[in-house]
Length: 256
Image (cartoon, rainbow, N blue to C red; front, side, top):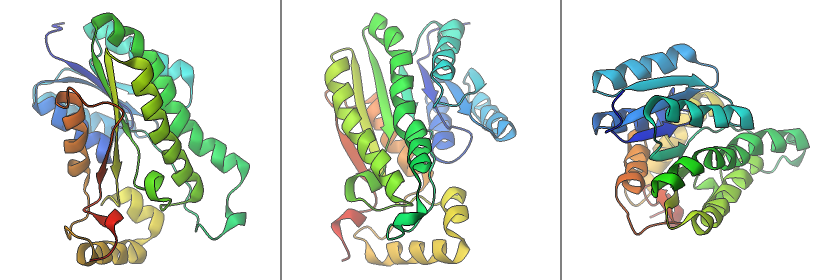
């Protein structure tokens, strides 16, 4: 198998931001590892789109909360192509709970969310680092959230996990330079089924309307917007590491 094309592993890429990212990469000359935890059919559908764009594709089930799964993902890419040029730590989870409901979250909720949103990216980074360091180059992008910057979001546990991911991005950028750049994107509200299901149709639509009318850019983020930000960090930004990119239409600035 030719190893001329760059290779990216994108966790949680059977839908949403992850799917938009692998399709963008495939269309721009990359081979990709598509990862899913439960939805094999959705992952295969995304893979077919990527193949139609000229990419060689691996589809792998893995739970990033499990270190062995992370190492297996990295090994699969190296075995197939002999290289890993990029990692996008996109897999994520949450539990929807009003921030004022302090009894609504248990210690187990925090542990489950941190296992995927914070420990998972650490384990994936550790798994791909040797290949990138051997090559003398690599780029890692963590999908964090505006929740980790402003303390909003689906639950306090989720916001805390993304805040930790942002801090970890800076720590890893220091530790892994000069060969590996590590950055994070921080999307705001993202249109799509994940939030529609978590919030319910009525609340989801109300939040979209509020953001579209009350933020400086009067736009709500979609998965393709986030994929564009991720691609910038992967393919450009050669002097950028340890940074976060807010992708929320200016919502963090407050109402107009």
